[in-house]
Image (cartoon, rainbow, N blue to C red; front, top):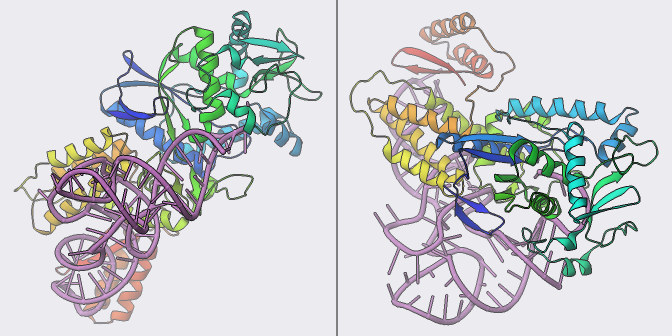
Length: 452
RNA sequence: GGCGACGUGGCCAAGUGGCUAAGGCGAAGGUCUGCAAAACCUUUAUUCGCGGGUUCGAAUCCCGCCGUCGCCUCCA
């Protein structure tokens, strides 16, 4: 399988270094409920995870929660509570929606606040090696001690100086240095450290956790494109100087960002759609299909009509996946579809082409059913594709879900009405069933029904 | 200003040197039906932002232009 590696800016053949694939995916900062951009990112890494498993590889995935930072403290102050409460609340919300989105759980979900020991250890190590320095109760990473700095994001420190627009920090030796340990201000939560009371800087936790849970070298490090600089650039620097080994990660995989009418979704613009709200109107599968129908490195256009269109498309898929033909003759060779699907996925996780293949399998299933041929092997291969892509095939909720008895009763009533040619009554009963999520069809004098 | 991505049918979106430019949504017609729904069949880009160039051959490579977006210390 080939994957686009941000580090080398090309597609490269993926081969894990050891027996298991070590995968670290940057998690969320727990200052708020997860939004649709998080859904995009984690759906994509979920599919990567599933596909690696399908290829026969074992995967150990670690995903962090940044459960202490400025925004969380601000939120806690706003809500007159503490940062732990805010974080716990949003971590619960995270698991709640991600489970609904059928995103496989990572093996470990370390939190910044539960890895303080490892973080302090790593910072101490960096200081002893001369890559970091204490200043005013904080500790900074000295960017000039790493000659490779800027490799991932393809920029150099001198050029950055001309374009920088961040506030000056008197404690820093160099403008590009970044904070590893932040001295606590009055009334802020803090942890004891060799440099006094404070808390971890943002970047260090991922390095410390990756080292702690996966080791000094990993296979895949993932996250949104907005993390390339400075977050991942800084992670590389601190990890590689601390461990003395490189590369920290073989592959750097970055997903594109959700855009709304040509603009990135962002809290400052106020165009954030949270997942909870999206799930009120659309099925988990529809959101997943909307994401996977465009390539993971491209920006994803957020337009509710597009998710609604995906919901419609899913009707086809669900229906095809539940067909059984009862015919014995004419089994179809599925290898053509299988090869096509695999070829698409092997080329940098080409889910749009893989999904095109899924729809073609669906069409073939319908065609064969309609012409009296066996479909079982196609249904099996379709379900396998859907499993790899992480679809649940769960039916969307309808306002009034009828029991089987109710459905049979209504169908019988309609049957009677049709016999007496009271078609208006019959059509009313049909509408009633439709709005309750039951689709009926009159086939050769028999009325068949199915939930949709 | 620096770095990067992108511009393909009504909408979304694959394809990145050579068979008929995938797939989804939408639209039109047909089959089926009391009428439908679903499904199936047919139609819906002689053309890939614009202008040059390379080549036997370009949506795909090169140059220029126009336009959109992201990152450049909050971010999935």
